[in-house]
Amino acid sequence: MTQSASRQPATRATAPAAASASGDGLDIRLVSGALGAEVRGIDLNEITDAQFDRIHALMLEHLVLFFPDQQNLTPKAHVALGRRFGDVKVHPNLPRLEDYPEVTLIEPDKGGKADEWHIDVSFSPHPPIAAILHLITCPPSGGDTMWSNQYLAYETLSPAFQEMLEGLTAVHVLKVPPVVEMSAEHPVVRVHPVTGRRSLYVTRMWTSHIPQLSRHESDAVLQHLFEHSEQPRFTCRHRWDPHTVALWDNRATQHVAINDYQEYRRGQRVVVSGDLPTSDTPRKPDYEQIGDERYYPRRINARVGY
Image (cartoon, rainbow, N blue to C red):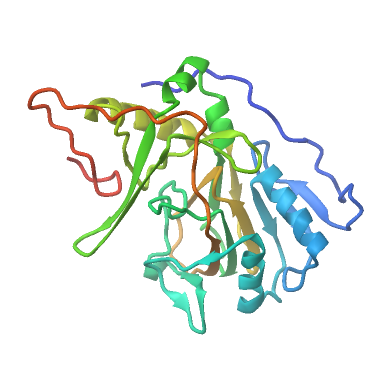
């Protein structure tokens, strides 16, 4: 299946404001045409209610925010920032910081190279709302992270294809044989609970299949959506400096870590739970097998064949 014909997506404000128009002293600069903004002039170790409200609004607008020079951020303040968005979530598999189980350690030798496009923990019935990553140590070159705007991915599909996707769901699976398995079913097209905008909600790392379609239809549609949603025109790419903090909306983005380095890399991440991906379109009924046709409902993280 070929990529969708180009359509004109909605755009953000294009002026890279040298200072915030709100008068709060923040220096906000866009990092790409699709999503992302760098925010300077704030210490995340201690923020006011008004500053948090501004950060929240900026996240909804730009989807991923980068805060350089956050050397003062302590694990306690990191967790506190996450709790301003909602309940913080403990990751089921990754190592955690001693005395702060809500803080996940991101290290390449401990499962920290998530080098395939993904939505954080979409295999959970309640995936994270947002994630906050404090990168403490990074290689002198390489190790960038990319994010993709899934609003734009949906909005640039043809109207006929958008209509076809309504009412479809996708199964997201984490399967680490022989002991760990989690799965959840979410709309292929979800509606953001705050902005009301539609976005694609399938991901190459975790999505297994679309139960309303046959095996081959599901594979073809998902492969198209994966390739479409990962196009460079929907993305931003961030070059890390030590003690930069990234905050992203996990409901409308995907991200991938670029695996092009060998040096040590270490980060600490907090994720905010409480999301329930929903659609305003009724779920279509499941596909029924015809005769002895083979339809396998789960693959191992959409990577291993049937």
